[in-house]
Image (cartoon, rainbow, N blue to C red; front, side):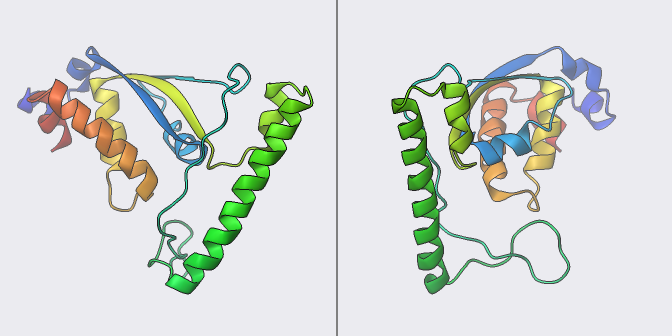
Length: 174
């Protein structure tokens, strides 16, 4: 198994399949759904779900990186900035929830009312993939340059795969 993984004989690892049920903010889901090869994604739709939306909020805010870097994060925001940004963030999230609830209360179809929800609203999906596909996802999303919030999901996948494939997974991830 180690030899096959080391020499990129991926077809051997294309037969084992694992399914995860994941709940994360929409902005994280949109980064992860870009991984398509060897994976199947089935997302719960707010068209059919009447329960109240749930929202994610960061514990800390990261600043934009210095220089001409187009992606990624810099240092943590200071206390004064965090307090200000938290206030705007909370207001925007609460306002969107109020708007959504009002639209639903007025009889607007959930498939239309959901348009006012922000990207920090949670979504849920079943994500099924081969051992080979999961290793590609984790190798990319566990990189220190990957967005912290997507790394958190990749860490959970990585831990699950380590338990299920104690020999093949370390070989694929090395």
